[in-house]
Amino acid sequence: MVKAVDSALFRETLGHYPTGVAVVTAVAEDGRPAGMVVGTFSSVSLDPPMVAFFPAVGSRSFEHLRTAPAFCVNVLAADQESLCRRMATGGAEKFDGVRWRPGPLGSPVLEGAVSWIECTYQDIREAGDHFIVLGLVHELAVQRSTLPLLFFQGGYGRFSPGSFIAGPDPDLIQAAQLAETIRSQVEDLSAEFAVNCGVLVKIRGDAVQVLAANRGSVAEPFPLGHRQPIIPPLGAAFLVDSPAAEVDEWLGRAPDDGLDRRDLHRARLDKVRECGYSLLAAEPRLLRHQQAALSAFELSDRLPRHERAVQQATSELAELFCPDLLPGEVYDLASIVAPVPTGPDLPPMAIRMTALPASAPAERIESWVDRLKQVAAAAGASLTAPRG
Ligand SMILES: Cc1cc2nc3c(=O)[nH]c(=O)nc-3n(C[C@H](O)[C@H](O)[C@H](O)COP(=O)(O)O)c2cc1C
Image (cartoon, rainbow, N blue to C red; front, side, top):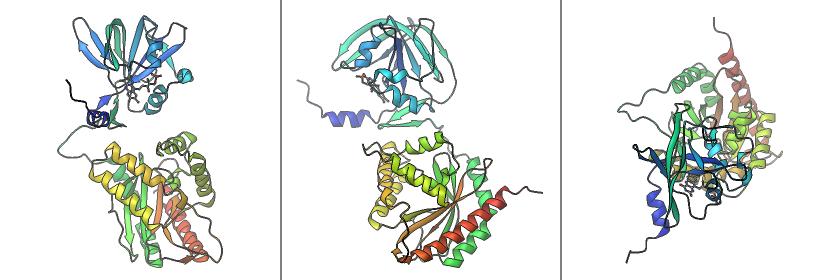
């Protein structure tokens, strides 16, 4: 008798094996395109050329797919995560708006996929709760030689080459040089209010601190060069001039916890766009929780499961983001952030004030905000001024 294996342990253990991500497509019997995402695609044999994938026995999508005589395996690229999420749903409308062309046997070849492999069914056999599908390869091609999308520990990622020496990040070097040119303004601001001031730059999906002037009485939790993934509600200051697609991408980084906070995040972003700054109220327990999640994320080589913990902990800060300031009231603030108007040719930048004195009256906060906005505007003007 085979010993029963705990299903959670099975999933957890096998989830430590990374896979690529492919969409198996076909034009089903009813004439409509069908598809499903699989991580179980594999090459099997060269002579004759065969590949395999393993759909769940209960898969409705595979039921459709198998009504066609042929199918196509589309290997997804690293920038096709949103297409993958869409194709992994159960609905019949998942092809709406998806661009594809028919392959030689008529199966959908998805635009932007790294490669495609079109097959006929050689064999479908049951193996426990999955089928083993063997496909005989008829036609195949690399369509776009680029990085593939990878799946690991329940999260998406991309391949990065191993090396003894990490190469310098050109975006980071450029950002540090830009920040250096506004150093004196930032240091003056830090000294004037005895607070910590940092210059943050958006590099890909992270906010990276590239300059620090720390005259506040509290030490900063993270060092210069620290990268923090931009997850709603945080990072709104980087998105004040961003197109809708970038805002959607930011909103899509909120955790998948069933709580749709999109409207709340959008409303807060509108407020930051209107006022030209953002505030984060200090709630020590939630902030400590978020900082601990960030530390674990960094220490673990940014593993997907730690990323999810950061998403969750950051999302829990939503209630603290951009509180209304009422005259005569006092507030404990964790940070004030103002976007630096850098224009379209430079990366989005912001100046952040932290280590702010506690129980600050609204009027005092407004004076900090006014100075911070002045410094950010002057920094933007000096960064974008033509150089002689
Ligand atoms: C990265 C990833 C890999 C997946 N791999 C498989 C797989 O190998 N086999 C499978 O049956 N389902 C797999 N799925 C689930 C299906 O794509 C899809 O969610 C499911 O088929 C939808 O339900 P339905 O088939 O009943 O329509 C995967 C999903 C994701 C996101």
